[in-house]
Length: 299
Image 1 (cartoon, helix red, strand yellow):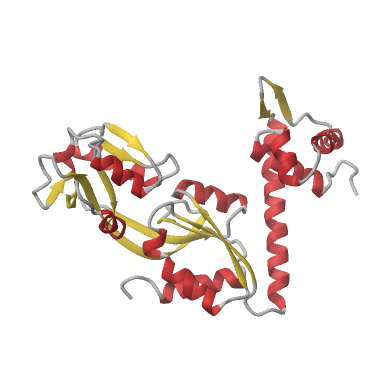
Image 2: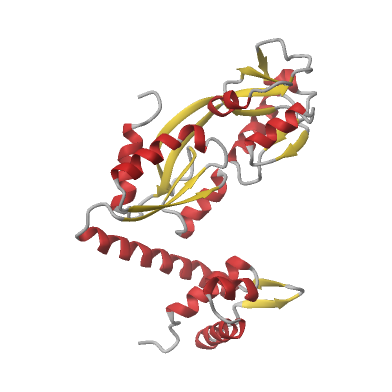
């Protein structure tokens, strides 16, 4: 065996250090002392004969060698998780765990019944939920932090998906807006109104901004949030208008706020369950996808 090959614990320490961005936080996450983690990283660099990190200016930056090691180390961790899941599946019923990502908004309205039914059918499965925008969920799938995620239908050929729901987008605007009594509105009619956008990790931002450009204007930003309730509060306060999936927007109607149909263009919240193409899916993940197909809204 090549003596330069690093130990798995050293690679795990390196990956966590990059994720956390500091020795202090990474050591806490790994339940190590900071000196023990520093020693692991030093041993890793010595084995490989390369410097992996640039230290200074209060932050850590990866060298070219560090980028290579991080990519391979994350892939090795994912292979390790898949190995354990596949071994567990050889002689078990659906047990184990499912690492699942859900959108920051809409989860209660769209996924609650699915989660309750899944846990009822498969009480032996531990479901670990993480919330995020489509971009962050896709990234977590690539690193192996998640096995499945609910996100806007991807165009990335490295991802496979199962369509789940397709909700039209409605417009929430202040009751005093000149268009508030119209019942429906075209995107171009909102060109002079600030738009409330979502967090950077939301692919829906890109779609909205593209639709505005196609309509002939650049939207003015009135604020950002990943919380639908807070966005509705900002609308009532007169900060702007927001486009949200109808299933979410209906639950946010309140005094001072009006919900309108988006007449033109037609925009939808097309959510699918996504996973890395070619990745091993545990029995728990396959059971989730089968149930999602069974309980798809509108079935």
